[in-house]
Length: 324
View 1 (tube, rainbow, N blue to C red):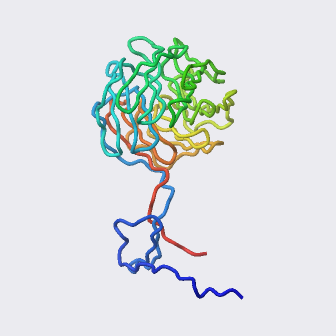
View 2: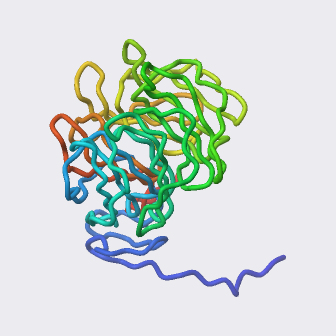
View 3: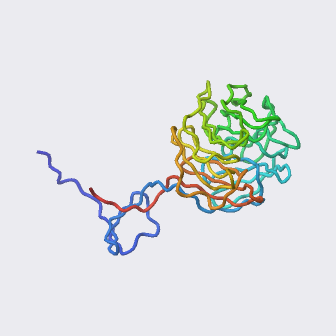
């Protein structure tokens, strides 16, 4: 027989109201509600207000991994070179791009990003690299100048893919970046512009939504070799939306369906689910970066916006502990 006399547990705090600043894993008993509670990781899936951009604008791009670490650049104000960084509380204006542009692509993180193609008065192939403090014109330009496409390269400056957009017409073309050069890669199955994109690299991407001759919710995934159309489209066909996350865990939100929308949908690698709460302000042509667990949406148009909303997919929260 095994003896357990040496095992000793921790005392559970007994309080009349929940602690104002609990720590992860903390457990307590609330004598007012007669409930045992704990502070733990929980699924939240909601938007909350953040700090405003310094300059209201739309049709721009950004990069970043979480709601506390983002960079926004470009915009149609007219073609803007302005760059701002976000720390989870406020935006700070920093060094501008070398060439102002709008409807561009953005990939990377707050301290290592790329601004790709777009419109600087006309469509451009130019690419600029951001190192956290300044922009440098990249010697490697994209093969085809285009605007309003999707991109995968969330969290990396050296492995990305851009797809779709407008090059004089809706395009299905895609190009892959390996940190040194751009290479034409297999095309989308559906040519479209102002679509959403997500993904972590040039071999793992997701394209969704956009405009063909009508709004679409069509979804395609890329494995480094070919695009595959999913049988499951977004629940709401829309264009000019944000997209962020990975190929198997993405978020699509905002945009224009038949009206401006703030509706948010979550992708699990197979299908889209409507999130019960959408953004507080419906808008289109906005910026958005992050992952399904944590992200940020900023700017946009239903008149140029400076508003920022922070997405929390998972976070620490007080939960009631039950037994069954």
